[in-house]
Length: 321
Image (cartoon, rainbow, N blue to C red):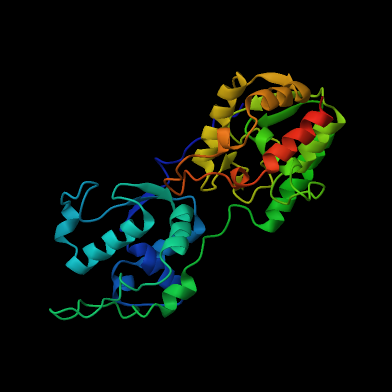
């Protein structure tokens, strides 16, 4: 196995940014320019991120994670400090937190729809704090959008065709274990005969139905999995998933191994696996849902909010009995 498969590049692919710069970069994307954008070379910074959305961005500023002053305190204005704290609060993050550039831009699209209250201030008894010349938000709104996916539609199709061909010809399936549950949800949906562009769930399900005794080797993570290659968030060169839900998916893999009494590398037939799933994971929420969705990374899967899993499990148990 390639030892670099799924390996982190944190130590060689990381940079520090001040939180408010996320807003400035969106203004740049929308065609705006101002003194702070020039002073902090925001356009150059955005170019690095646009070229490499997998950059790990560490949020830094005037304070550490408990509010003690850092050296940056003495180089920032009060308005800059306030903007940074506003952005952190809206994104649910703290100084020192590190997220991928793609993740941070996604958060800003979801949680900071305009510059009101951050770069544009209301009048107060002591006068007005200085506002950015772009504070009306025209350029920010134009530029406030997600970064590109890891794979565009053409790249997804280029991965879909050979990976489906390999699935059709193989006599052994290699799959990350929680995707057995995803296949179950797929089987329980109304249009389960239509293949998806972003994965190979239908193709694997058809393979199981054609040959319930096919050996299935269970893995942890996307690097060797037959389902993942066409995904818009999959990077083939590294065998990793860069979707915002991927920590959650890592936990799903390990929780499914525990629930089924198995370990990475184990091989069972599709029939045996779905018998165990029927006995030990009768509902999707056991693995894929939480009592409290406490952050963006740890939100319950959409499959826990309907009965697709239960419907699909009944179908699979009938096919694979």
